[in-house]
Image (cartoon, rainbow, N blue to C red):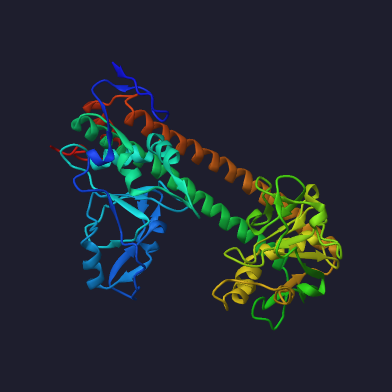
Length: 453
């Protein structure tokens, strides 16, 4: 038998299951960390916030810092995390993301994290954690969150969110089965992510080798006297970007952003050589400066001027000719192959060897036209040779990207299957037996997968 529920976020659940508000299944009132900003120390007790919740786990390497033992003891009067507690991010871009505590050492949390401690006689924490990973929880969060400067959910809202709750032994079986199944999926996904990292490194190495040494396996080299590129092939020259290109700024403070009009490319649209077009904003032509021509041409290069992605760049494709640049810089290459220069700007010897050093001088990374123009490039003597290198890279990198796309598709399929699996079991669409748990555990080599009690 199925119990029918009219809430928009869940369908039918088994008759013997209940829908319980979180506040009905906890041993202590849902709480959060301190709302004050503590003085951070170089050592002491680890202090974490929302950024430490990564891939539904707590990454202590992403801690805010350390606080003193005295301050930790003060904060513990309100909230003292322990093994089995569940955290829910309650404000910011990652609102609704969750993790659980699987360590025994002491640490403190900040106010963006809400702490849920299950009453072990009513709710098994790992089962509740899986519910909070599912759409059953996510849809409730999205129906309930409010917006100020950012999305958030209040403590009272979290307490009233509901969990489909089977009898405790079944909760434990579901959690054990999902532990085994999700571990297998996560292991496969991790292996595929490592493959993507290897392919990224291959792309980076192919790019660096081609644009600094050419296409010959054993090019004779000449010294340059420069630290960044001490050797380049004979016949090549080391020149500054400004010797082959002009650099101008984009609109600066952009005019009013509209849903229609001239496409405007911003830093967030630039992604490692490509310009994403899915979120382009637009400006009215009459709002553009009349004293200069702001329109982009194909094969000009956008270089991010400020922020976390300073120095990232992308060449303007033909379909975006006539767009405008926002705050960032525009490189117009006139005395070399624009595509070759675009590849140079994406390489390690430019990004890490030169641009990174230029942007580390300020608290907020920033790059100006003079600094960008001073960047050294290794330049083959003719455009024909430059274009041959570009054609080689286009072909080789496209091959690698096709392989990477296939792996990304596999990861997406596995991730969707994991999500579907969790949903099916925490809503009772699929039921689990002790035999199922033992079979899944045996496949993963687990012992005693179900806790007693």
